[in-house]
Structures are given as structure tokens and as C-alpha cells.
Length: 185
Image (tube, rainbow, N blue to C red; front, side, top):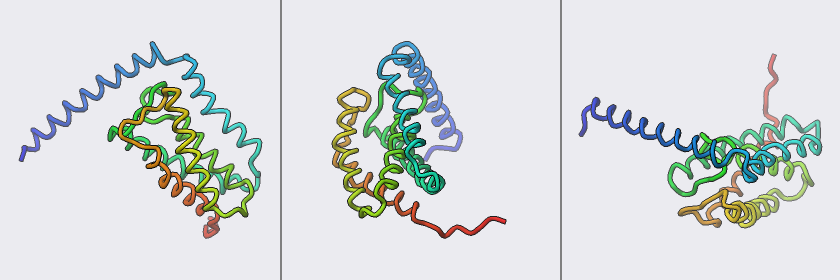
């Protein structure tokens, strides 16, 4: 077993290497990604769906939907970072270079799509919507962004995303149905 000092030195050396690689990534991004068509595409995907949601949302459901949307964002970011860090996939043409996730997917497309699906025809069985959502995101959206060379699955298969997307949708749906909050005085 290594001493505490040896462990600290190993961790510090690793962090130094990570910082060097992040600086290289920022340089590549600044020189070769920023303002390219795929970067602008990511910017548009980050903004336009939110504008659509603001226009289409039911005003009296805004808080409830945003509560679920923030849950979806959080889970999406965490899972995306894990997948990237574990070498299951990676992204190119990031909107923000230091984030290992695809910002438009985690912060906009996932939550906005789920919020709109929850709001639209709310009496449809949530399992039907969850299955629809998980199949479309896994077998349509992921292949499209891979084809565009934004997303590169390394050891990940589209089918692996289906149960994850299904659970995310069903949990978000469940969250929007909660009314157990006590009043703040």
C-alpha cells in the first residue's frame, strides 16, 4: 500500500495531466470548432427548443413542468458525464469546450422534449409516451447526431439507452403528478 504522500503525489500528477489536456481541448475548440456550422447548430439546439417551450407551455403548469425538467437536466448531465468519463462515448463540436457532455442534449433537448410530452395529451398512458420517447431518442436522435459526427459511441449501443430514457421519462412524469408539498410560511 502506498503512503499518503505517494497517493497525494499521484493524484496531483494526474490532475496536472488533466489540466494540460483541458487546455489542449480549449485550444482545439477555439481554433477549429467555435463558429463552425456544427457549433452554431449546437447553439440553436440550446436556445430554440426553450423558446418553443415558452410559447407552447401551459402557464399554470410551468412550475410543475420545470421541476421535472430540472430533474431531467440533472440526471442527463450526471449520466452523460459518467458515460464520457468511463469511455463509453464522447462528443465533438461542443458548445462549451470544458463540459464533457453535449450541452444542447442535456440542458435543452431532453428536458424540453419530456416537458412537452408530459403536457401534450396528459391522459395518454405515461408508459406509451415513455416507450415512444425512449425509442425515438435511442434509435433516431442518437444515430442522427452520430451521423453528424457530434456524438461518437465507443462501447455504447443504442439499445442500452432505451431503458434509461424510459426510466427518466417515467420519473419525470411521476414528479409532475406530485402535490405533497407543504406550504411555506
